[in-house]
Image 1 (tube, helix red, strand yellow):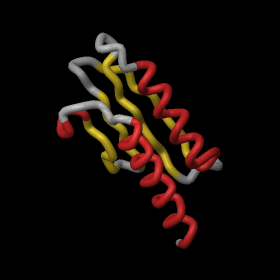
Image 2: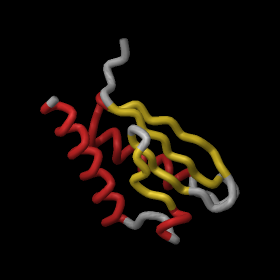
Image 3: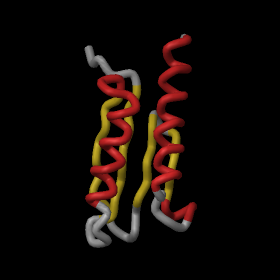
Length: 90
């Protein structure tokens, strides 16, 4: 049985050069949740940068119109921590 409690997927545009952003966001999520999260990286195209945790879209560049900046990434990290804390209460 898996030890993680959450699953995340980060889809990123390869031609746009978003691989480093995806790797950095992966690091931030691991820092927030440790072994409680499993993260998949999904190479994409067409300007994609989408962060999904347990089926909930936390960031989508297409709807937000931009990639997350540092403060927004910290907010994403906080959302993951909140989700993890709510799972612990169940």
